[in-house]
Each structure stands twice: as structure tokens, then as C-alpha cells.
Length: 270
Image 1 (cartoon, one colour):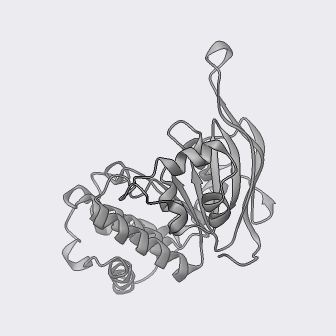
Image 2 (image 1 turned 180 degrees about the horizontal axis):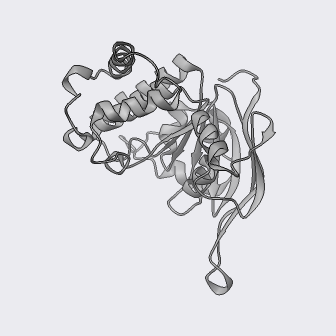
């Protein structure tokens, strides 16, 4: 479990409304939260519950309709491109579809060089940049020397997700938001990606936020779990509190939807 640490990212009354009049959709409905440094948090809900919209607001990709986001105890300010870029040095994301996360015209060494430049390493000699890129690829069991002349689309889905983690290794953000990062890869690769993410969390001490519909994954990786339904957090607490002793019918339904190997198998026996 995460120990008591300083607040890293918090929200007050965070709300997002799409559309106007009769087409108005309340995607996120006045949510409050407080994530701490080094914590692993899962935001769990079905498709359409508002969790990805919340993630996009946290990343600064869309603006909230109401409410405030605080980063490291200060009200977040991304009112200019310079301030937004500074914020993005500290908060990064891995998305569900690795194939849409890359510029198809940029080779892999170019992808990694962009990360080095973003962290202010553009002035480094070529040999040092190669050393950093090699180290990042080795962290996720990729061989940089075999990738330099390849484009991301020449890799498998699992390799592309590992390359995303190599990027995060170079960027070293304070916060990583992982939006369904394993849903498009096979079970073996899924376990590998989760292990790399947890290893990366330990390596650089970042806060890790999983956006997922998989409550089993949330139990496996999380310090804290937030259950989201219709844009609201209906239950929150430690992984044991929420998943082994759920209070809300919606949480119990998510748990009951976990595939069972045997008919008598129950999540509470894990």
C-alpha cells in the first residue's frame, strides 16, 4: 500500500458537459479526488462512465466545464502553449491503441530523440543520446540497434506498447496516465506490460493512474480504487476495501462480471 505522501494531482468539482440544449451530455459530474506521489490509482468503470473524459481533462487535452485541477498543490495553469508544454513534461499518457500513438513518418530513433529534446537534452553529444536511447529500450527488453531504421508500424502491438514505456523512461514524468494500456494485446504481453509499468513506477517514483474497465486488474495493481458510474465516483478507497468489501451495487456488478475459472471461484478468495 502507498504510504502517506504529498498530494500530486487533485480535482475539485470537476465537470465536463458536451453539447448544448437537448443534446447536452454530462460526461463528468462534479468529481473530487486527491492522488498522492508514488501512488497507484485505478479509475474503474464501464464504457461511457466518463473515465476517459476525466483522463483527457487531467492531461489538458480538453478543458473542464466547471471545477479546478491542482498540480503539486497549486492551481493548474495551461493558459499558454509554453505553460502547457511545461505541464506535459510532468504528466504523460499511454493510450489504448498503440498504432495511433505514433507519427507514421517518424522512425523509432526519431521518436526517442523527441523525448530527449523535451527533457532539455537536445545539446547532448550524439554518443550520449544513443546511450540514453539504448538504456530506455533495454529497460523494456528491446534492442535499440535493431530498431533504428524501423518505423513504429513495423513492430507488433506488444513491442509498440513497450516502446511507449521506453518513451516514458526517457521523459520521467511525475504522473503517468495509462488508459486501457493492455486491452489490445494478448494475455502474455499484457502481464509483461503491467510488470514494466510497475517497475517504471518504482524506478522513477511517479504516480501511476490506470483508466480501466477491468476491476481484476485494478485489484492486482492498485493502492487506491475509484469506481465511476455515469460521470460520478460512486465508491472509493483502498483496493481491499472497494473490491473485497464493496458497498455499492454497481461495484458488486463489476466484480460479478469478472470471468470465473471455476463456478465456485470468488474474487474475495484471492
